[in-house]
Length: 230
Image (tube, rainbow, N blue to C red):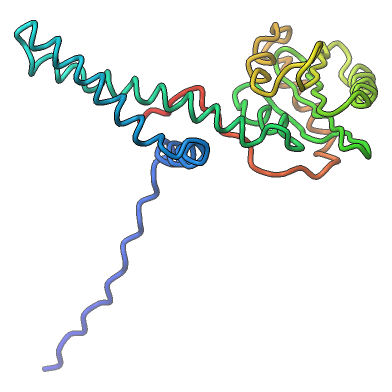
């Protein structure tokens, strides 16, 4: 009697890593380049907070109970400090580069749509265009000549996006400029002038204008303000 051939084993598909693990991994990679000892510092912070909790627990007469409560607290403290260090390292890695402002703007995902590099000149001054419930936001990167590009883009938007507020933001250090580190906070705090329906209509109209006119480096900067949850 012929032996039955064994069916070939189908290799199991590897489970994809959760998004929060990928985000933490990328953030740690960026932060470790700026702070090579970040892992050691985070470990020490965790141990210090845990030691404080254990000491309090011993004094209260409930060391095990207080220690159990302190573990998640120590984890949160370490993650909070890590998120701040990673955010600082992310900004430092793109500061001064062409398209840094676009990276920050494109990392704002909820209620924002950004088209980078809609205008530029020979001096590598560049303008980006965004739409949010605050209206159209025209962001300029570069020297004094970028103001002319921003003015031209503003006039274009005022003609094409009738009734939609237009804001101008100039990136950089100095009077009348917003630093790259404060850019996201600045633009997201602009007063909301459009309803959700008006925003969707304005976003659709802006998308019809097409994509960027200037090639820029890819890879938006991850938003490190919120620690991802499981």
